[in-house]
Length: 308
Ligand SMILES: [Fe+2]
Ligand SMILES: [Fe+2]
Image (tube, rainbow, N blue to C red; front, side, top):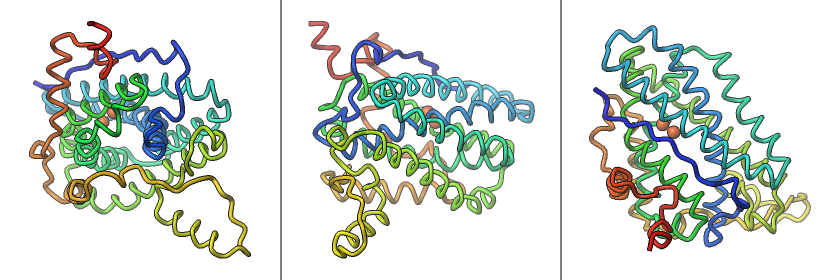
């Protein structure tokens, strides 16, 4: 029997304006998280279609149950991120074009790539989430707490459920495809595609959100772009389009924790990787306990104050 729980959430994004710069203390992280919202809508839409195609091929009842719960959780995530992005589009209508492009990229994968490729895509990418989200959740006091509580709560919910279903995509891949070699062989093209989509979102932010609202160059998370821009700035003959400061989201985090996350990403792609053995963020346990106790997890940092 699967341990996954499908939780429906609503984050009151329609109640009042959702700022692009939802954590003013960290514009680079605000923008990066917004890009995750765009990616999540397309990626999780692809997952839902992929699991529907995969179900008839699953012979093990426990795996079928896991796949169903996994699909339902991802469906909820996608729906919540749509509400978040809808609010951003209301403020910056040009972002609709960006969302269409991002979703279009994942729809293209659904149309043009094999089911095995998409199962590997999902298994590879989801395997990186636990170490990456642990870094973020372990540092929630600077990354999430100072921000808009609705946006912070959306990401905290999504990330703890990604930790909860960290084994699902690999279990499904192993049951249907079952080849570490194939998964490793396609990994470079998968991560190239992930980067391409994030870049697409960030280019859309630079184009459609004024600098006074985003406060940074949304593409500054890409090392190659940073190098190119600094070269352009030094060589005035090359015309440089300036999209703002080149801050990075995690510069203030302890280097040891950043390296641990990086090592976790590499480990997640190796053969026989078992996400069940990963070190988990302490916040995940707190979140599940509070949820079970009836705490309002859609206002993670302010529910207490509202109740008292
Ligand atoms: Fe998700
Ligand atoms: Fe997931």
